[in-house]
Amino acid sequence: MRTVLAQPDFRRLWTARTVSQWGDVFSFVALAILIYRLTGSGLGVAGVVVAEIIPVLLLAPLAGVLVDRLPRITVMVAADVFRAALAGVLVVWHDDPLVVYAVAFGLSAGAAFFNPAANSVLPSVVADREIVAANSAVWTAAVLSQVVLAPLAGGLVALVGPGWAFGVNAASFVASALALRGLRLVEPPGEVGRRRLLADAREGLALVGRDRLLRALAIGQLLAALSAGATSALLVVLAAEHLGAPAGAYGILVGAIGVGAALGPALLLRLIPDPRRPLYVFGPYVLRGLVDLVLASVRSLPVAAATLAVYGIGTSTGAVTFNSLLQSHLTDRTRGRVFALMDLLWQTGRLASLGVGGLLADTLGIRAVYYVGGALLLLAAAVGFTASRSFTTGPDLPR
Image 1 (cartoon, helix red, strand yellow):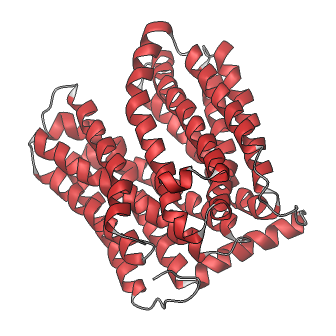
Image 2: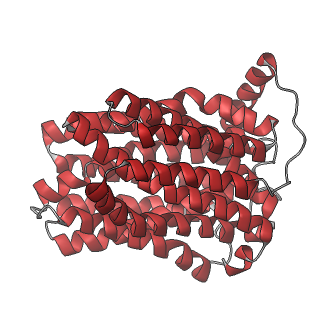
Image 3: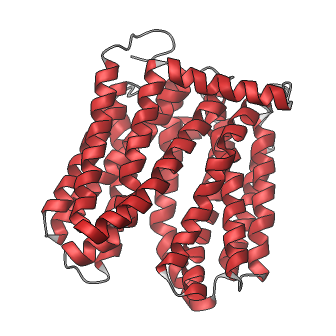
């Protein structure tokens, strides 16, 4: 990580993403607290989640094509400026739930363009052998930001109100845009038109359909989302109803995940020289699936916290290897569409999981949610391992 962070171009990209993450943490916490105050219901809070998922479902195919057809830095800067303006609205106007939902929708719409562009740009900034370290540096900064800043944000929002948090978020987008302006790494814009956009979108979908590795990764992504959407959202219910833990224990469990997620990339880089192999992408699904099964079976808070730390390790190592393998396997002209499609699958599965998981918890109990979640993750691993037997090692598929 020190090696890649010493490179000016990557440091600009890393700074932009990290500073933006700082603002996102403050905004995420403030939005949850604010909308609960305004609506007084869990359903109102869930509405913010839905408002953040829907833009990805609507815009991901278009976003992926534009990321592959336009200069990616321009797309990222435009997304930052757009989100800075929206976050600024909430600084002065945050007393109306409809405004909050609309801004949450818009911020997610901007992220639907920014995220696939950022993932597509990274291989142009660092050498191929440095991709895993670069993704590890980005992930570690994001996790540490959440672990350190989320409790601070919650305390300050409770003390002085939410407006300042949205101001921090707006400023973070401006800082991100300024950092990105110094990068000159993308090709001139290609032809963009309605017919060309539709053709490119179909091409990206066909690529995933015919490529065995991409198809396995896509299936794994969807199955993992169907699991994690419910298990992550309902962890607070597991702590109260199954573990019988006090209210403050939920924070301990979330913190345990954060500690594991922060350690994961460092362990990955130390133990495995080049983890861009299907084994290291699908293996963490096994780890996370077993954790879900343990959580459904034990009633000890210390055991649950320890296993969730392992879950965090699996989440972070899986994310780093997933992104790194995709970036190495894809050509530059198709990365945006494939990353956008993976985002689309993730959010689709997450939305379905939230609905089904809530129904399952109410009818069969919270343990059933975690048993099913664990089974889905083990199924994702089985699909990946089965498909990986037919993968061949070539110049576009790292060993």
